[in-house]
Length: 116
Image 1 (cartoon, rainbow, N blue to C red):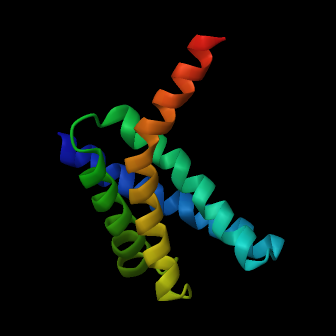
Image 2 (cartoon, rainbow, N blue to C red):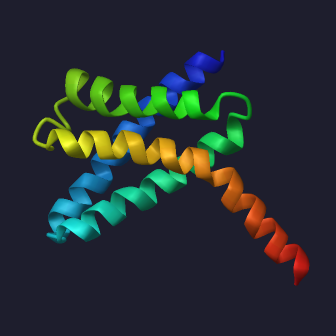
């Protein structure tokens, strides 16, 4: 059952990336703003992964990133064909990094709010 959740999340991740990519291209942002937009989206997806996957969050992020970007976005639908390869790697690696770092950020935010 968990694998089906991951596969569905990979599809929705690819759809969300397609929307973010379309918005970035329409806004004609510079490279730093584009990377920041993708990073914010990946941070939100990492939050969902960590929230609903408690045991294998990093493995889930790797599978979702690879299947979402390469499987759905390149092989099944040509959403990300025109993206450079380094951007594909950036999307996958940043999702992994945010998924790994999110528990530390959440714990720090909980400590800050408890001290107030």
